[in-house]
Amino acid sequence: MLANNFAIYGGRDIAVLGNLATDTVVQGGGIHVGNRFGAVPLSGTTTIARNMLMRTGSLDLFSHVGTGALWFAAFDSPLDGRVEARHNLIHDSAYEAVQFIGSSVTNVHFDHDATEKARDLRGAAQRSGVCDVQSRDGVPPRRGRAVRLQLRLRRRQRPW
Image 1 (cartoon, helix red, strand yellow):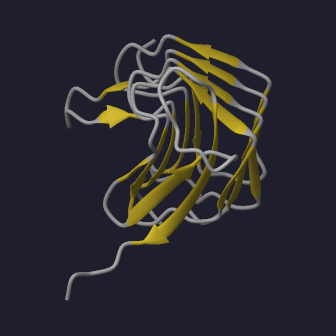
Image 2 (cartoon, helix red, strand yellow):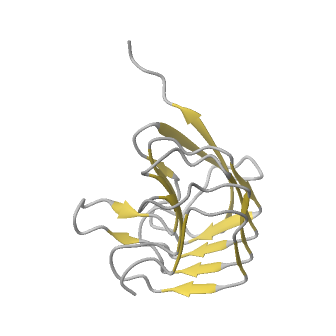
């Protein structure tokens, strides 16, 4: 597929529920949530639940950066509307399982999300944020086994 399997560009109280997203080829991920393309900024609660993302995430041919299977972008304005991701499975992601990019992404909550065979089991944060990924049982994530993700986004400290 050329582009994201599912994309939310701003709006209010949106849900992506119970889908199977597969085989992203180039220029996108499995599910994308972003403030971009001049849309009304995200507000209310966006729910991403009970989805299976298989072989999603790809290389952006223009920036040469991997795109996450589940990715959040704050390009036009900070993404601070509440996002609840729960009971999603990310399977065999080509790049990051979860990615944050742009000016500021906050108020994203994960509950019982899992990844299997992801190329990069870490979340990726670019520009203003840092993403921490921990397994639910406290054991560091390893390739080849399902892990539970808990992600916290925190502001990067400036070196000066």
